[in-house]
Picture 1 (spheres, rainbow, N blue to C red):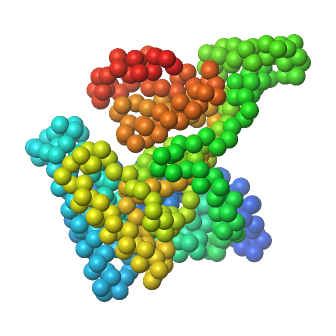
Picture 2 (picture 1 turned 120 degrees about the vertical axis):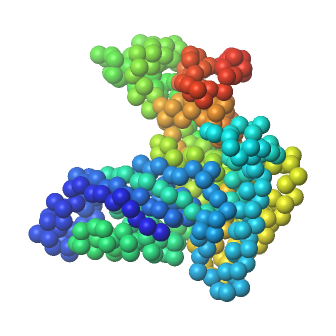
Picture 3 (picture 1 turned 30 degrees about the vertical axis):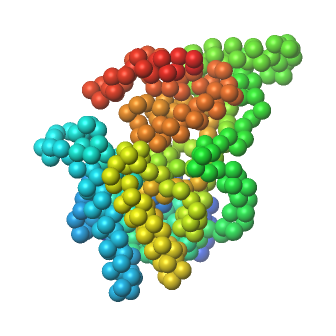
Length: 441
């Protein structure tokens, strides 16, 4: 692991201020406000995908290396510190997974330039599907840029007792790059959370989610169109919203939809933020990365260790693999990983066992968004160029949202449905099919 391309601007000013005030007189809330003055950027090279997943959850701006660059090299993964026989077993398992990944995604012609199409793969299994067998022990690189107040969230993560073995080395190296007094304050930063109580609170909601019911509406404002309409007239009317609603009388909902449609047509999308919904979602670790990469929604994820202890949970297997000669081998490797990581969790620690989660493992999360965010996210994810699993989940979500509002989600579709494709040379060429599919919308 290396931290490269580190750059900060503004921390020197804060360091001088801390020296004058004295570290013992600095409160974390004050520190958070003062850190907004500065900016930080860095690259983490050669970390594993457990580390990158947890860092991406912090919602700083990041760019991560694509998994299409995973190779069968000896240094393409990180094995946690295990005893002799256990280390050998871990290496054997990971090698089997990488070998299957390599076999499944073999190209007909290795000289193909650019991104291969499905027909270019020997077994019809694109690399995006083959990666479902890759463990989170696989190495990756991640480039991060953040407002310096995000350093508090980063060190809350570094100091989290649930992940103490995961970030030990990164924390030590990162502190060396910071001004001394600031680094000292961050090193001792701890967040007081009662994770058992959080888990208890969300249990009933997570119980509503499973492989079949993998996109479930949990709550929303009573009438989204009315809520946004009130927001629109607050901005565009001299009278108070209650006075306008009284004038509208029984036509209130219809009038609200009309004013919403008109104001959104002007490009004033911010009124759509008045409409909020909360969904429960279950997806593979592959698609979970698609969820957190947007940084727009509020997410609450179940504990990753719960995936390890839930032996009844199904994994996501792409159709291309289900229909192939590799299916049985795929499921056999999944079973071996499930046994091994449960053993590691019981005999070492749960955070060490996280390295043996697979991309095909499913995680449950709660997602809270507003209509403006959903229109943006769904318009990208329902595109036929989007990854198939996130596309299916997004289409399910759109169908539920359309039941709640007739006007808010009109453009929550790829641009080709109501205009022109924006994919350029990468267009799927199926604009007519997409227009027909969503004609009723």
